Image (cartoon, rainbow, N blue to C red; front, side):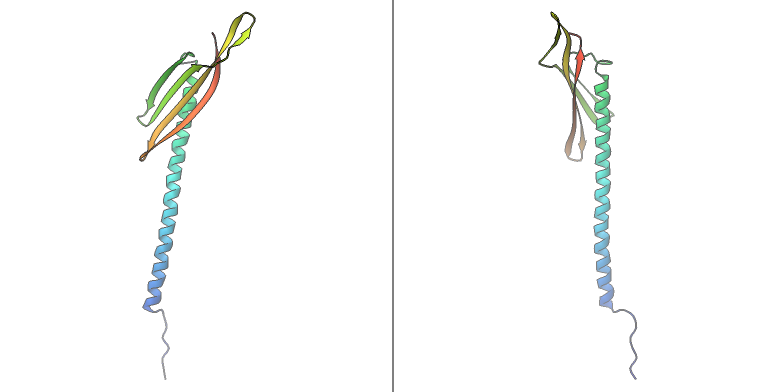
Length: 128
């Protein structure tokens, strides 16, 4: 009488471990990429917030006149404001009443070996 073997062979176990390790490797890459994308997204959100706050400062903390201003936030995000007179003037009667200025804010930061930038621009009306 022959006895039946029960269980798995060594080859079957090795194949199962190989499939498991490949699956785990793929999952680790997916989670790693998701974490990297989350960090990049947070940096972009912070840069946009800084740019919007600098745009809001023009005309309040910074004069609305042609010029360039720059600074750094927490040694991480550099910002640069460029104010230039727009090529047209609004005339009401004989003298100019309002002068449009183009205000551009560029924020930049280093992400690994790469330099990333966000650029916001608007037109503000000011006194001549």
